[in-house]
Length: 331
Image 1 (spheres, rainbow, N blue to C red):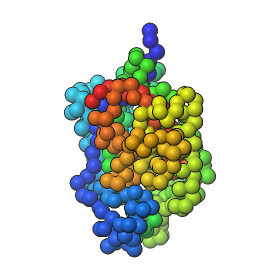
Image 2: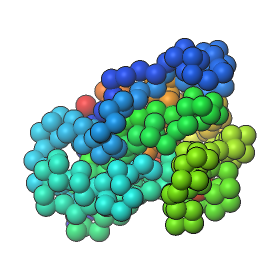
Image 3: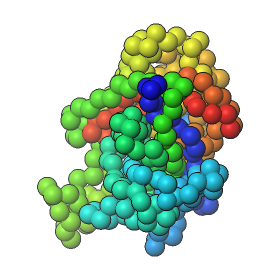
Image 4: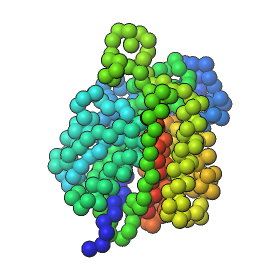
């Protein structure tokens, strides 16, 4: 029997209707459109305004989009991996609720948290399950309601993040397409530079932690930027070297959308023409776990069977890495 590889066979996505532009942000904190655009490449981001809806809503919508496009019976889904940094609840898995709501009644499901690298790690996990031969359809959802953990009086973070969800279906492939290689890494030093201080087992919620605004994302922007530039570029370069790929061989770079300068630095290190760099950061900002599947969804029609794609991401922890994948279908 031919070797089993794990290929993406369908994608879906969802973003909320409300658009938070740089000009609107300028009425909330001391900033302006030129300052934000020049430093991040972001022009606007989507925000889920309904307080009664959480990250699961974004993931369910993205999964339903995929299911409808693929004409997939959700009962055939074996597993649901929900990549997120903003689960609905601290204990009850968002994946379990999502799987039930989309009708994936035969799937087992779990959450995966690696900050902005969550979807990348989810791809690796899904591929391992598929390659084992025990599972045929694994749905990976990446979604985050970042607006729920952002302090909109802190201009170092509120200009960056948005809300959104994306999904990809992984299935066995016998043509040598799908996931080819991965280079994934972590470094616990990142805990000091990108975090939410309160709400965990070290510092449980209290009146004091709420008053001190310790339940919002905090980051040392300069340090995070430095680590992100070097590590994301390094991982992408290593995956190319390991697979004897040049910039000419790579058809597309699908990089985490945190900052345009980080994406540009990664592409430069890969010696990749800018026409091969897929980008939607200007429309959505950093949607954390959703950035990679949102790119797949937005550019799906441009992806051709056999295309060489390099995925790259960097997130809190620190977590980072790169995946080399051959695209498996023509849209």
